[in-house]
Image 1 (cartoon, rainbow, N blue to C red):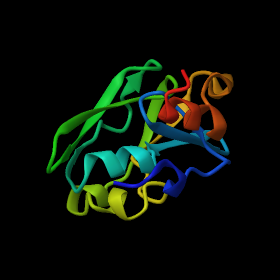
Image 2: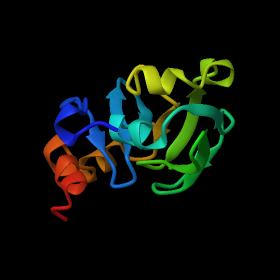
Image 3: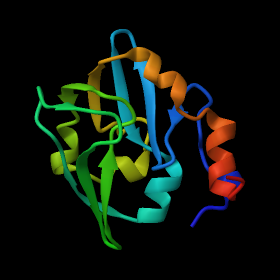
Length: 133
């Protein structure tokens, strides 16, 4: 397990209290799990993904990650429609462990891109991890 200071938490992302990250890329939001989440889960062996075209509200469960330790639900940081899923994860779920920011999970067309402003910046997320909140 990594120490908090060892975590890779890019400053250009926003985070949720549930350990997902989001990044706006043009008209879509890319979503994955944080370095902290993948580190806590251990070796990820299976990813359950939604279908392209599925719609969700912010905070809805949209899939699961199965590791050698546990099954963990995934929650969407913002509401919207799934426009892409990372199909590479079907055959290589360990990509999330190798690089959780390159190993994205879904892309969504947000209902309201302004919802990203409600999420945590790097410092806010680190505060959650340290138990400041």
